[in-house]
Length: 182
Image (cartoon, one colour):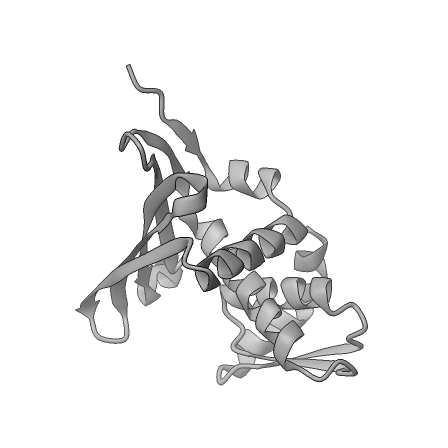
């Protein structure tokens, strides 16, 4: 019988740190640059234009003996229902046997991984004497962008936020310090 490990969003949030995620993302980018990874075509489906969609991303980490896929769904109207707009699920497999190794809630991982990727871009592309960070958009992703960039660029002195929804922007600014402390 095959044992498949299942990790909830809470399990994931307790098990990983921003530093380790940044390190993992950077190592995967390095592996990709030398042909040790393979990214397969993304499947994308729109349920309702601008309001609901899903995508399936998949790939192979050859040097780690793993492959997997992530399904992410985004439903903008979920916030009106008291639900997150984004949900994700990740499945990981052994590349020698096809044995499923685990299923992971992909919602938190999606946010923190994307934040790490953005921060790595800022680290390598921004001026080394940069003092301010501008984040455009005050959605769920913004807190991960701030946390990851401040981790890699601790000399930053200010973080500015812009969102076309002024109320959302204001709520983010009021809440960011507490969210970063979590």
